[in-house]
Length: 308
Image (cartoon, rainbow, N blue to C red; front, side, top):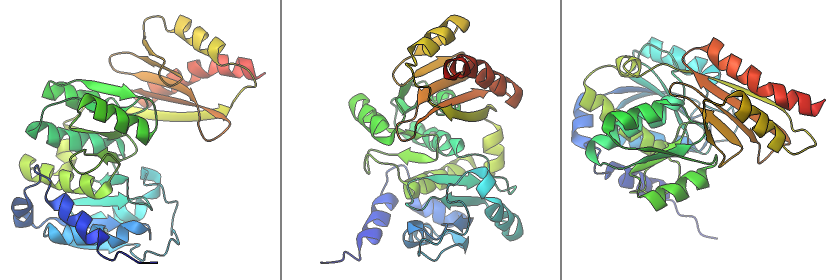
């Protein structure tokens, strides 16, 4: 068996060659980046990428042995150590990747994990300045992506949940960028798969072009709250649930590509059976937590009734 020891270096070189990334301009800024690789594969590629971009890196959890020091998903509640590192070091940005380094979550210069939904939205904000075209994401991704697409004058297209569904739709639509709200950025000029190093390079380029802190850029976007819930899948067809929800929310736009997604201008709820577990997921987004929780509550009612 042979071992390709240069694959990480080749990937870093490919990311540095992205036409929207001005390597020299990023190097001149000498960004300080706080990095958390959760002792996963990111430790083999992220430091090399950030070094290539001239960043001053302070890092934790860099031993690539798979012994996760915390819950490995890069969601805000798991990133307290990275938040503290950003504050202590005065970093411009904090970056956390998942174990297989296809998802990127960010911490602002204020030391706050702003949510992985911002990763794709901000990366798209950058790419759409340089190349026009639709943005593709899944049905459970934040409205932030639609807001960024609207600002750029391009459509936002929704696909069923799942990386492959987004990638296929991107290919079919000729989308310059897409991905998922879990921090997964897909740039077809590199490959049709989620890629945290790509997201990292695009976000640093955005910081260069904006010339202001990440916290200010994030605050310039609309604010939403996503609430996620799940319950055991009833031993019956979900069609009656979908019918009841469409009747209860008759003013909503309905999408039936993957379960049922009901959407309004500033909120949505998505009810879908999991493809990997015997559960039904109920996810809602609204301008504040109370409104999102109310959408979840009302959407659970026919599901709870079917399960009794």
